[in-house]
Image (cartoon, rainbow, N blue to C red; front, side, top):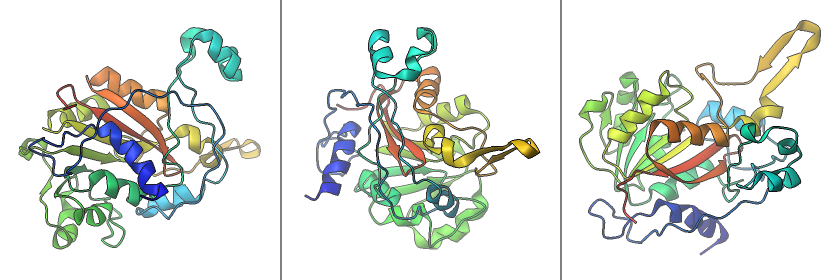
Length: 286
């Protein structure tokens, strides 16, 4: 096993997929490890392969400087000793979130392929509309490694472009999804949806015990994607024009806690601009 495989295995451990599960064909158990506190230390970002989505590639290319990961949970006294920022604010406003660094510098597609390997997967946001490109499509690149890969998107006009290159089905209505899956993959979608609570409820209704989410991370992108030009009183933001919001380690976990009863098993800095979270539904095996 090489170092890359070992890193991904550490992340996959949080999936807790049961090797005897009737829907899992992964052929190995995935126990849930004890929670590990993360050290608040600077992380040097390692150059990664270009992101498969051209818009993601442009955003990722702008990231080069180290990022400071969020601190691990701590008492207020510990937070004040370990964080200059925490010491400046009342405890009520200081949020502490464990965030892993194991995926820093790992190519986006490689991580998703290893997470989905041998599994029945529903890929939400599969079309990349309106910049659908078969050569760069994450959905097409995942198809060969999944036991089953179905796609959901609200832009069915893109399905005819993708359909000749994959084996699975496409859905544009939630009510048409009736099968069981091992996991739901939701990469860079939540920042687009107009109703986050309603969207999470739809994901919860799908029969799959695990959800893998990625979202753009304001903490990693702050110094590369925002600029205020004072002379012109003009704010410049480098962002996909359809995005409604940015997330942070805290706000991502917060919307999951508010609107679902899922357990967030882990959160990682990912793809130099994003956060990756793995969540379990209450009836997940393990």
